Length: 163
Length: 203
Image (cartoon, rainbow over all chains, first blue to last red; front, side):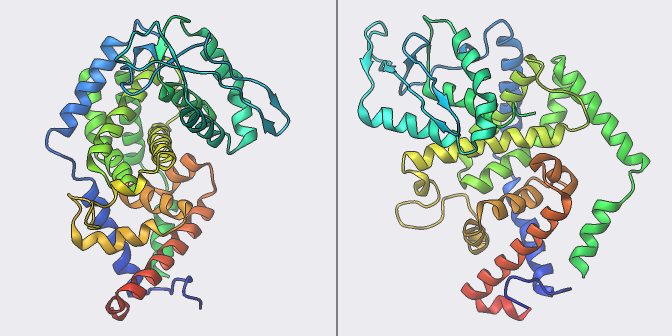
């Protein structure tokens, strides 16, 4: 047997399984008041967000913002290669949101890396890309939103719509 | 083959009246939660939030992040309910934990991109993150050295406490494949632990 082949009835495997169960139990010990805070968040979301579009209902991110769709265009998919052009304008939250500042190279590279990383499985991702584009197009052109919101939308869809 | 037999019993056990009653109870809970019944939400959160927390904690080893993401998971469930994107088919558990896994994956990706993923695992002294019990550190470190797929099966089974059938639904893979992967992951873990702490091999 190799080192990677468990031996039948190996007591060390049994002990390890028990230790894994204890580790899992240790990680299931949650901080005091945790369940109440989760419940509060859920009830707040279920009562407060019902009248708002999904993306816009989220808390604005503090560290960066985008304006779109006028400032973002995503497109140009060809075969297995995806060419995604993302034109973004970043608005620091402390400044006048009507005075956008161009996204610097590092931020743009980061954003593109995120999007390309989400395209790890082209077949799966491409299938949902239209849905993402539709959702982006439906957003209020005057609304601010965060990079994470775009990626959250995308990742949710790229994972099969979570369903 | 005690492990295989134990797992086999778990998989092949016929669905009994108790299972059906539990499935029916869960369906009712989910239905009521979709209609914003606070009592149903409290029950669902009581059942699952600790397991979701553990799954996130096992991945990120950061209890603050685990709480933040766990809350976000349940808020996402609210949003998915509201958008009517959940279809009741007796598969709430795999659906819930898939959301959790997606959020963990997204967070891990962002941390990788920003070059900060190691900072949440260890503090400046190189010691394990606070709130981690030292007795589990060798095991946690060994798990972190497994492949992503092997880590996944360990965490879903032992942290999220999911049956292999549910994991199979979640990952859309055959149960046999997952059993084999789990079996191999255990062997790899044992080999790694025996290598780092030789006394473990003499049990």
